[in-house]
Image (tube, rainbow, N blue to C red; front, top):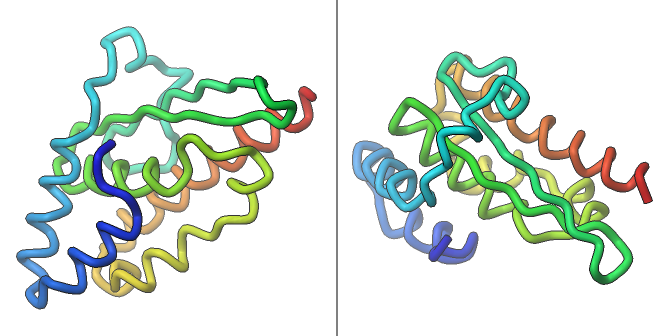
Length: 142
């Protein structure tokens, strides 16, 4: 992923119109690395999302504490952008850091908390909970 969270925040602040912000989210979603077809599995499917969402988790333990890397996909354009946001926030971080990071803070800062439908908000919570659950499982396995 090319954009950092700081880049995304900065770009959101430059866009005053919500149509432009949604277009930017869709652009971000197009930047997601393609998820291999076999990763579109039931095991990777995120429950609680109105759209189809898949998150694949890889855990490495090179430096002692588990580091989690995520890849994801969705069948909906805006949701792909939300997947991009969540993965940018959490992927490549250690498990404890993932558990301490509140995605709601980011969504409030971007104004997304007030501009997402309840279904999309529930889907975002489901993605975050799935990622945090994977982090808890990785810590428990150490």
